[in-house]
Length: 546
Image (cartoon, rainbow, N blue to C red; front, side):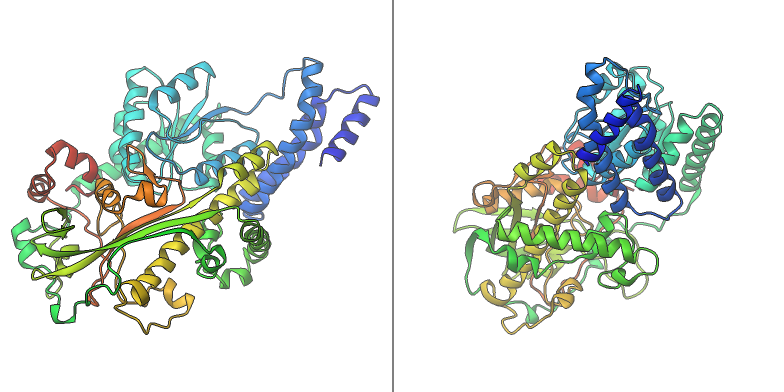
């Protein structure tokens, strides 16, 4: 790439041209073709990011020559400040959107992760940004995005605000973020929509109509929500009376190997054998299920090329030990007490885990579940785990220095696969050897992915256990910082980013469910059981509040 760029620069100079012309001419012409193909569905994200790598490497070579001649750079279509909000550490989606926007001629100022609102607003002012983009993965980030919108309103700003990330939605944007800010607020579903949204927002002819249309859509969402009859909620006491009655004659025996188990360096090759590849392709916005996606008529060619690159990098990660997989799990005697589970650490020390119960009124014969339903009031066992993938930073730094977004995103996506595979593999080890309640289990990786085994491993912050603030309790029990090198941000996101944690329930009737909407009565009861202020409980459970 550098040789070709230098050849073009030299040829341009020989005919009296300037280095900037190489960017404004052939490089931008090529990226415009890429942008058009991506926009029309004829090229897919992996190829776009690869194309951006070529562009960035070429521009990096030309910059010293441009600066030597004190030339102004090509004028971008617009300047966009992007950030993952305070408390959140996830950035794959944001980085992908940034690359796509850059490919289409926009200047992107990426502030990284865990960025406070003050830094976002200050940078937008200093850099005279045209748009601000916010990203987040965990549910507490939704509140942080509302805070950014409120602060933009307080500061008298009118820049368009883009909202994106796995936990975001059009409905939440319409109900919570849009009312907080008088400027344009747009929810962007994925990278393929980002360019069209930015283009319309910065268009002299299209902006007014697009903004008005979106505002109308969000107003309609609010009207529908206000007028829509939601499923009624039961009083919490009635929901408890309709709880799931597990057959405790079937409960698991005590663990074969109780106590705390620390794993300093799990074999990466073993974890690779337990990969679920489907979410990997989803991260690259390639729709389909592995392995069928490799033969898909539309995305198959792109998926096969991406998979080949991923397998090649995977081989290097394992052979050269790029990562270290650290984890911890433990088991504690316990008993159910209402919707709580009481853990006994020794004769005098115990910890209470409060859980939430479904309150939406169910049709006949359907229970209102709570995780505590799967624990015996007369004595039982519960487990917990935390796993993480360490060592990614020097490799990301190497790719960044080489202007290589493609391998940067590829490596992060693989690190996430390792973390999920570690959680799956450790659960298998627990079922067959440590707790050993299913010692004869013989399941293929496909069966593991489909969760065709006994027991569940719900995580704080997920539908069955939506309170992220239970993580510090779990981490203290596991000594996760010391035993697995995992820390928590103020929003309870885990560091390193590629990490998984949760509880183990072993009852054969245990299943995953979503708590969904809860009433004020359960919120107040939960705050009392947690021993926290009502406002704190509201903060962590806002997405579930009626």
